[in-house]
Each structure stands twice: as structure tokens, then as C-alpha cells.
Image (cartoon, rainbow, N blue to C red):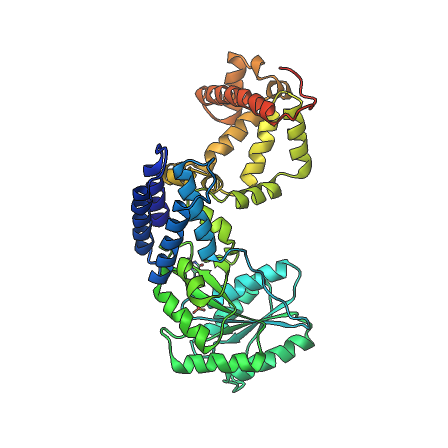
Length: 445
Ligand code: GDP
């Protein structure tokens, strides 16, 4: 996702490293390079101009903290501007005061509307809502069927005209669906509409007629991020023809250059609300401008990682760990095993590490990191006795052979683990020292 832009920006920042002070010439040169990087990422020109103007003005002004070095100052400014361009605060769905809330999806054919309809229905169902999916794309052969498949997979009812019923008017279907939702106590109606390959007067008129029939609380425009800033012209047409209240970026998992994401807010004036990141129905996230900006800058998506970690490590476990470290107690292989298990719960290890700051530059190496390595470490620790896990010092040569045989690895791997663990243990002690608050009950070690 936005890899080229990330690489270009990190190259620009690297050049600034080691500079003691930023001259006006430095600011100009850096701004020029950022401008090129944005243009290369297919960001719309008015957006690039406004961005560069802001970066220059702020980098020359005295507003940045003097505590930051020049590279950090520029990174901070670019980060703030990216957050602004991406929309500032995340915006959540607005629900109707009197249900059902009607959400209409619009966009070109192939943008990812039907897929997103299923994803959104799944998300909302997971939050305790009772959504209803409505098939109003009666033009594309198979569109109704596709929505039915998606609905079945997320376990959400799909409202569609009966085959052979003669109902061929999507406006009628939309209107009837809201009445059905009220009867069936569904609190959210998600209307999937027809798209064309290009902007088309008839399609726009139909979307507007559906809008008038159901008076949506939200009209979300689904945009294929791979299309770049061309998609932005489409967004403008939908904004003017139908009126949109939010944007969904789809296919962000593909080789998107970033043009659509970075332009669409500025051009339409509407927030990006969701990011669709794959073909699976769970590949969807609420869009957080701040996190996306950090990700583009290769600072890693710390917030997402922290959230995932919070889910993976239960509160008890975290408290136990903190108490141990603060108390200056030994970090044992048993603790290590607990943590490994929790980290593995967070997903494939390369993804987890990829979210850490600086790791973006190591993408290739990370891709090689395979989860089986972590599973082998787990197997080695599981082959140890409780005494060995608490006091690894007692693990002599014959014990090492026994552990290797028990876990199906070589003695060398057992040695490596024990060496690394020794180092980690030392680091943990230092960290414990750093975390110690004045007056804490930390023992001298
Ligand atoms: P619609 O015509 O707007 O309803 O688009 P569809 O939902 O049918 O999607 C068109 C194609 O894009 C399908 O093959 C989907 O599987 C695929 N697709 C949709 N969303 C995503 C996404 O976020 N990532 C990827 N990789 N593919 C997607």
C-alpha cells in the first residue's frame, strides 16, 4: 500500500539526517522533492500545490519545536499535512434517529460496491445491528446473485426481487426494501446500486431516483484506489449528480500509488470513512487518517498494533508482566512462551512486525520471516521442564540433546534460543529499570 510514496519520502528524509539546521535552500529543495513524490503517486495537482505551500510555510516559520532535528521537523510537518489531506479525525457512520438507517452505496462498476456491502453488513452485525442488504443492481447479470452469496457468507438477509416476479425497477425495490426492513425489525438498510464502466447520465439519474425514494442517511461513494486520481473525476461527478456523504477506498491492498486516497477528500470535501483491503469479507477497516499518514511515512501503524496487542494480551497478563519487571524479577522462559503465544494471536508475524516504526524499510527481509520459526521456538520451550523454564542455567549438554529430540529440532537451534534468551533477559532487566517510577518497589539487581 503506497509503497513507492513511502520509499520516496523516506529517501528525502534520510538526506536531511545529520543536518544541524535547515536553510531556506534546504527547505526549497526538500519541498521540490516532496512535490515530485506526490505527483509520481498520482495525487491531483491542486492537492499537491496546497500541500507544498503548507510544508514550505511551516518549515520556514518558527512554529516547529526546536527540540526536533531538521529531519524530524520536516517529518512532523509532512505527517501533519498528510493527516489533514486524508481528512483529520476519523468520521463514524451517522445513524438515523428513527430506524432504519439507510446507507446507499454508489460508484462505478467493478469499484467494489457489492463486496463492500457485504463487509459493511458484517461489521455492523458484529456491532449488534440487524442489517438488511438490498440488491438494486438489476442491470449487471449476476449482480443480485453475487449480493446473495455475500449476504449468506456474513449471515445477513438480502432483499431482492423474486426471479420472474416481473419487478425490474430498482427504485421500486429500494422503496419496498425500507418498508420490509421496518416490518422485519432491521435497523440498517444497505442499498447496493448499479454502476457502469464510466460516468453515464442514465446511471446517475437512476442513482438519484433511488436516493429520492429512500432518502439515505449516508450515501457512500466506493472508489477503487488502484485507479489513482482519475477516480477523483468520478467522485466529483457522483458528488454533483447524487450527492455523497462519505467515501470508501477499496482495493487498498493492491499496488495503489496513493493518488486517489490523497486527493479524494480535498476534491469532494467528504471524508474517507472505510478502507477495503482485500477480497475476504473481513478485509475492511474504519479509515483513520492519522494512522494512514503514519503508515505512509513508515512510522508504522503503532495505534493499530497497540490495539491488536491489547486484544491479544489480556489485562491480567499485562499486569503480571509489569509487576514482574518493576519488581526486578527474572523474566523466565515461561513468560517468554506466554508472550510468544499472545503475539502469534495477533496474526502472521511479518504483518505484526511490519507495523513497527522503521520496519517498513525491511519489508523484503520481513517477507522471509516465516511463522514456523516461531512455532519451533514454542515447541522447544514446551519440551523443557518447569524447572528448566524458570532457571535456564541448569540446561546442560545432555538436557539440550533431550530438548532438541523432544521438539524435533537440532541442538544448535536450542543453543541459539538459549543464547538469545539470555540477551533478552538482560534487556528486560534494563527495561524494568527504565520503567521504574520514583519510589517504586524495584529491588536493586
Ligand atoms: P461492484 O461492481 O462495484 O459491485 O464491484 P465488486 O464488489 O463486484 O468488486 C469487483 C471485483 O473487485 C471483485 O472481483 C472483487 O472480489 C474485487 N474486490 C472488491 N474489493 C476488493 C478489495 O478491497 N481488494 C481486492 N484485492 N479486491 C477487491
